[in-house]
Image 1 (tube, rainbow, N blue to C red):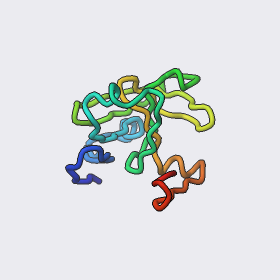
Image 2 (cartoon, helix red, strand yellow):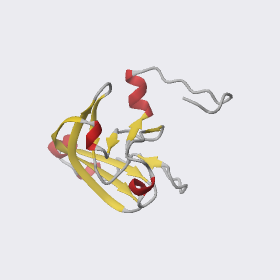
Image 3 (tube, helix red, strand yellow):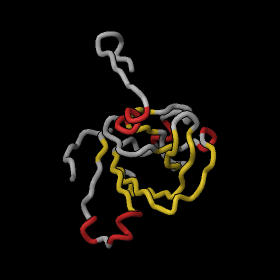
Length: 130
C-alpha cells in the first residue's frame, strides 16, 4: 500500500519492496514514511509529543523520557525528505508502553496505537482540542 500525497507533513506506510523479502526478513523489517522538516528535531521541542493520525508507529527522540532502552532485534526504517533513518532501539514510555527510539527525530505517538490503549476525543468546535 502506498499513498500519493505531496503535502508536507503527511506520513505514509509503504509495503512496497516486501515482495522480495523472505519470511525471516519480513518479520524484522518495518517501513515508515514521513515528510517533516529536514531539521524538525531543531524546531520541535524534545519535550513535545505529537499525536499523529497518519503514523503507524510510535517513535521518540528524547531518551530521558524512556526507561529500559534496549536493542529490539528488529529494524525500523524511517523514510523522509532528509533520507532514510534506521533504528533498532526501543524503550518503555511510562504510562504508555514500548516505543521506538531515534534520537535525531521527533516524538510521535500514533493515534491508531494510542486509541487501542486509551479513549481519545477531539472537539473541533471548542478550540480544536484533544
